[in-house]
Length: 385
Image (cartoon, rainbow, N blue to C red; front, side, top):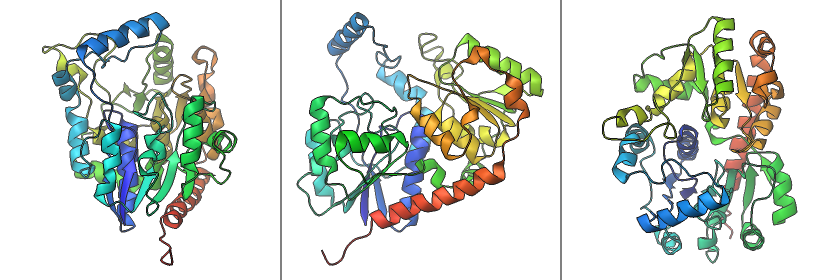
């Protein structure tokens, strides 16, 4: 079967890259031909960028640091993540930046589309939310339509009334629906009119840690420069203080696998651009192998801590979507590893309390089997039709 995966645009986000890689790997292992649909937002002219920035300032919206960046600088800071993508996710469609080209996908002869994962159903993150409900294939009754671990990212509804109506109609044509957060089951039932969605694992958890270990070994990723892995996307002085406290308590050495400098900290120039380059993803995975403890505010930082059986604290990130963390941790009975107020926690609770990894791994095996069965069943072709 020829399958097109429709996921979030692949850029520098490690979780985004690895969930696409993992889903591709699993579908290929089941004997399918897999192509990632390279849906991106259209590049904006300088004049329109200025207008967007002005509008954002007036309404108080945050401006992404990369929005005004020189295109050659964007290419350079993405050098290592792009190298990973070219090697491990090579089968991409042509670049698509508009709805007309999405409709032309019918010419590629796909037998099925799999939509997922990584907040692909969150309007603010998707180039066109209706594309992610397969509006371009609405008249193609031949293809299978599967949602695998599709995520809204949040537990409240962010769609416009118009998009809600359109996406409800489109979702009605899906053959099978699964979601990454348990809260999404109610959203789909109450807002989109389907009551058959099931809760499955994030694609990265479909692969076992040995698979990732083999990838790291094949890439000769160097040892990490410490053993307290700090994967924090939104830095604050309070989070820095927490890291120092854990470092002292456990006698560990903090390190991070991220650019030396953040894009919102300093302007990128030809002189300092190397400081902004994202490290190679195999080094990011190696960071969890080498860690004795993890501090993170990232969903996939939490996922890879669980996969590698590393004790962790996850700092809830409300703006990026808190329900993702709650759902994941509840699945494994690890809700107590989530904090939202850095200033009031007792770090001894997290550093001294042991996680029952035998129980966690047993749940992981069961959920992996359930999730793989969903994919296999959803992609079966009824030869009588």
